[in-house]
Length: 252
Length: 252
Image: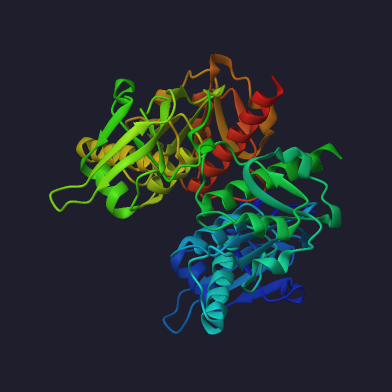
């Protein structure tokens, strides 16, 4: 059990499955291009490789070829594979679709902050209303952004980015928390029923009163005395809950 | 004592000084354009007006003219002026210059999250190295961004955005906190010596070891097990410390 970021490595990348974390690992394609040509890795440097579901392993670069036909990097394991610690409770953030490129910023930041599950939702006051095809393409783009952010911040597990759904599909979640002014403190939230905290952040203009009631939230989280933009609320909630979760884990 | 966001208002704007928060207030120029033409305010609606140093007052729109020659809005006070609560400790964030438009994102988010003072610094690994003229223009732009964010999030005081300075100019600050992996918990930081918490966030690549030592930090703040981008670290630190400060205030 340990974190990839505890290893002084030059880069972090993902393979498709746990079985791919072999003693010797040949990297090709885009990843090899990134390692050999963008980062210009040299033999002897350390990289960490993860499977996206929590397993990872440290490797030493054996060779890094930059041939015009395609970069190729050979890695040799430095240690056995290990598992990134799974923190409790699980942390999920649902955010109502907002304008422009804000969802990309939110997905990137929530990934860095250790959120386990990201749920885009359509609320009453959501401005963007993509059709099914566009919603699918956007979800795919957000998954790529999550993976890129996980690579950059050295997570071994990838957050689950769900498909877009109506806000009310979340009703009945036992650990549902609404972020709002004059809500309660973060410390009270570290042991949610069901084992997953699901924080719901409204769009610009907020969730409508009826929407909040229909969700029957387990708790309300205070995010300070000012009116936060939707993306700021999502990022602040993730930072607060992630930190409270880590502090709670430290107490056990 | 109260927060502008406690008033159900349609808009929030700033005047130049406390003395301008008169019983009757005539708004012209850009602000009037924003109120009358962009937000299309109508007589009877409520707005809050602040002086940027913590005083504010609620007003009722008497008239909102949209003449081609220039918009003009007349406001009538609904109540006496009051002061936004000053939270303790004061909260300052110093961030090392990073790439592109990241400082703008940081200034906007720190303003929403209630940071009192924002200090751009040049660290050893800062990539951007603006000359004096450019540094002054950027600081001016960041002040405009802070004001716009304060308008949007309904703060009555504006954060102070300092001029760019070398990182080591911060050495000797009694409440200096470095954000880093495996630092300590946030709760320990709510009573800094000197009354101001100053969190220092490094550039991409982090602060160099010697830089941290030379700052002689009072404390180190943990921001989780992953490698955060510089702007994410600044925003997360502000969210955590702002929340801890509010919780501390609630205990008194």
